Amino acid sequence: MILYKLLSLLLLCNIIVAAPTAVNNRPIIGILTQPTNGGMATYGDQYLAASYVKYIESAGARVVPILYDTDIKSLTSLFNSINGILFPGGGVDFDNATVYTNTIQSIWQLVIESNNNGDYFPLWGTCMGFQELALLAAGNFDLLSSYNSENYTVPLNFTAAAKESNMLGNAPSEIFEALATQPITMNNHQFGLSPQTFSDTSAINTFFNVLSTNVDRDGNTFISTIEAKNYPIYGVQWHPEKPIFEWWDQEVMNHSFMSVLSNQYTSNFFVNECRKSSHSFSDPTVEAQSLIYNYQPQYSYQSVPDFEQIYYFN
Ligand SMILES: *[C@@H]1O[C@H](CO)[C@@H](O)[C@H](O)[C@H]1NC(C)=O
Ligand SMILES: *[C@@H]1O[C@H](CO)[C@@H](O)[C@H](O)[C@H]1NC(C)=O
Ligand SMILES: *[C@@H]1O[C@H](CO)[C@@H](O)[C@H](O)[C@H]1NC(C)=O
Ligand SMILES: *[C@@H]1O[C@H](CO)[C@@H](O)[C@H](O)[C@H]1NC(C)=O
Image 1 (cartoon, protein in one colour):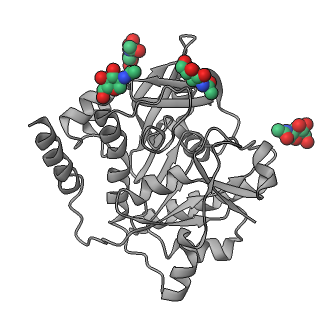
Image 2 (spheres, protein in one colour):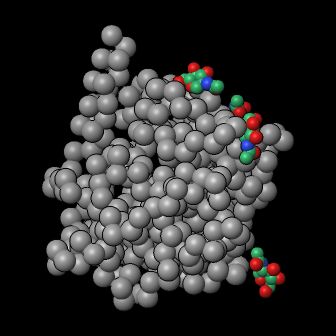
Image 3 (cartoon, helix red, strand yellow):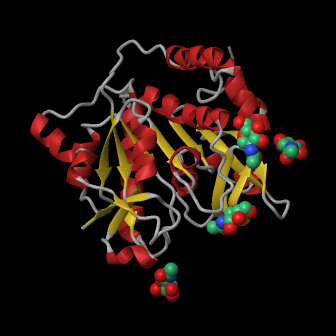
């Protein structure tokens, strides 16, 4: 009975989340690579954790990797061919990684301009990607605070704005309740956006609504979910892809039915947003050559215990 109820809820998600006039049921989503560090560097210059690819694919979309050192001409051409972009988590040192930082700034400008011109284009940030969205809105990469929140799974403390939001306003009530009351959102970050910085930085607080906050192990509050007021731009400080696709030997990730369903809700939501974008590749050969299927992920758990599988580039 409960299974039946949940399955009918899931079907409902895709119907209620959006009623766009033109629906693109073949969305292709770009996921940004980042420089390898530590033990990864022997395998390639750039990487992408496979869990982000599966997260997007499981919601009914295809993926193209966006190499972070792509030149602006190729980036613009790719942007006009795809239907949304995801900034994943990771550990980029923004001060030193100027090529990476320039690329996220270029993507931000393309996303803002496109939406300003009525060309709907969604952007999602997870963990470091969430932080990037706030920093890009502020035009300042020096606004993060330190937190004790690695390997840390908690329920979301929703604000009043959550129920009115695009992201969660139409979430099935069982999923909303699970996110609000069960320890199923996995945090794995040392930095974050403080409520103080949010309220002090008008470029951030006029751009984004806060949908949830959390308290770290030391009692310090960080902002955990945001949504732009006037753009399809969404950020989660937590990792919805991990409880579904990552398996650590000793872990706090919750792989329960309700956790997987609730975390998966975010990719169903985001991919559905991307169905409102009508960009497409003009050349099917270029499309085929751009897809992630041209690359093989490596089983990486032995060398990089954070991730089961990693795509390496170059
Ligand atoms: C970043 O660059 C500064 C100055 O060049 C250097 O001191 C620092 O070690 C670098 N940080 C990392 C993480 O490489
Ligand atoms: C949730 O956030 C509110 C402020 O929005 C705060 O007053 C409350 O203490 C928080 N609750 C928890 C459990 O962190
Ligand atoms: C994560 O937390 C679990 C439970 O406390 C612990 O057993 C494990 O060692 C931690 N893993 C890491 C990488 O910190
Ligand atoms: C995992 O999530 C479920 C809800 O789906 C909850 O009942 C359970 O207590 C959680 N497990 C742990 C270890 O937190």
